[in-house]
Length: 201
Image (tube, rainbow, N blue to C red; front, side, top):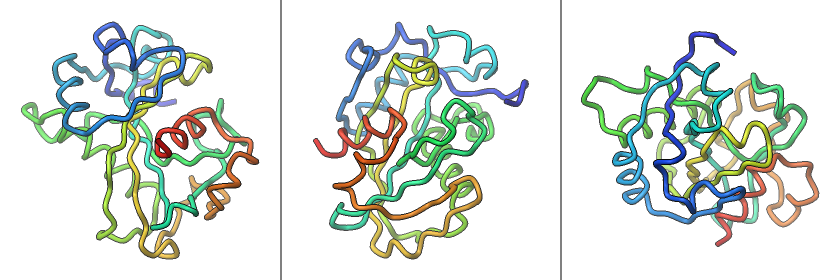
């Protein structure tokens, strides 16, 4: 972990109670999410500090890729910087939002969120079609795992018209398209289980 890295955080006690239960799966429209987070207030905080402080929720764009029929979902095996998730299967592409995602001091929460989400996609996918729609579907949160208790997932869904057009970068180990109905057979990270339930609602 980069000791000087700053990450976007929101104080847990400023967020709606249904968002921060021991296990939260909340369908939500983008406008409501943005308005609530804007009113709650947000700050860039040292990541090392935020990891030790469960009163803070680090915001993570968590992007799910599915084909047009939703019967195929992209998965990969966790091998990145978050060692606590190694060897678990994940549906979510994404990561922390950093000050680089804030173009200027007047940038809105929406601008920062979308910029961070787009940057994560560009970093983790070597190639992706620009025309596939990206839809915000809601949030996930859990206090069951050490990783989960200090993070809040903003879940997006991309419907891929041509799944073969997506080329993974090195962070997405063993990237593949799996049958959605068979995902439960994988040893998935908890967030992926929650996200799968969210997009199925």
